[in-house]
Length: 151
Image 1 (cartoon, one colour):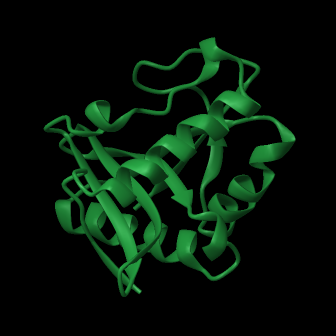
Image 2 (cartoon, rainbow, N blue to C red):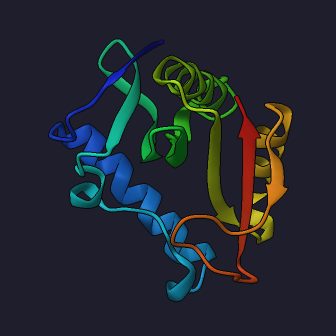
Image 3 (cartoon, rainbow, N blue to C red):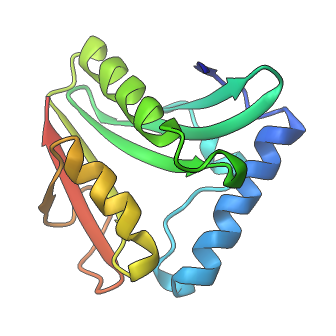
C-alpha cells in the first residue's frame, strides 16, 4: 500500500469522494453532514491523502490544520472492495505521524453517532481517541460524536 498526498484530480479519487458523500447522505440528516466535497478538500489548510495498490485506490483521509498545534481528521473512507484489509488503520496512522511531525499536540474528529458509524468508532478508539465536546466550528448535535487524542 502506497499512501501519498493526492491533488484530487484523478477520476478514481473523485469517485471515492463522491461515494463517501453518498454514504453520508444515506446515514445522516443533511444538517448533520460535515463531509467535504472535492472542492472543499482543496482548501490550503487541508492535506488530502490517498492509499493505492498498484493503480487501484484503496482509501483516503485528510488532515486539516485548525491551529498551529491542533489538527482535524477528515474524509476517512475505504473503497468497498478493500474493506477489512487495514486500509483505514494505515491511513489514520499516516495522518497521526504527519500531525506529530508538524508539531500538533492534539487531533480531533467528528463522526456520525448512528450504528453505520460504529466501525469508525471502534477504529478511532483502538488508536486511543476519546470522546469529547464539539470543537472548532461544530456544535452539539445528537447525530454527531466528537473525538480527540493528545499527541
